Image (cartoon, rainbow, N blue to C red; front, side):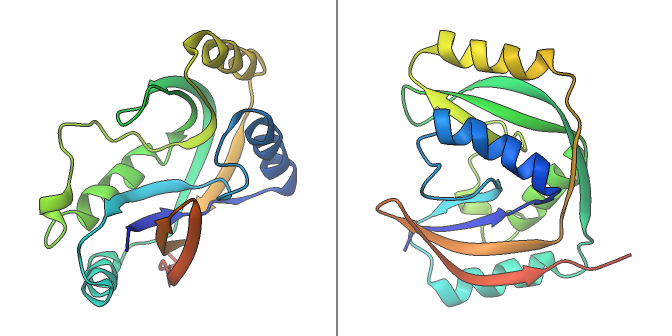
Length: 175
């Protein structure tokens, strides 16, 4: 198993389609997974039952997270030669970071890669050529876009061989 925790954002249909339009052209994972925020990255060797129990325990009491995306940024992938174009939230940034840190706070702490900065994001493009990514980021940022959404659930997934399998969905609380 290669366990992760992701959040599929709730978006207006037009915003979802705008993101997907870019992903279809520029993101190698377009056909593998829908737009998402990764909250917990690969945990390959923890029993699924233990992982699910830990995520449920740490997510208990977490409220729905509203966010707003207004900026695209370039990121160098830590595990490949690729660069990424990310949409990064202005609003909601700190709550997503705190959720990420909370999920890694106990039994997952040994898996937390603190040598890699966590930046909440939805990926819109990836490529080994940084000039292509820079062009995509510039095109997005010239638009003055505003994409509002919310994270109302967490999906525990297994990701292996370019296949995503949802194991469980955890609903977040409402205010």
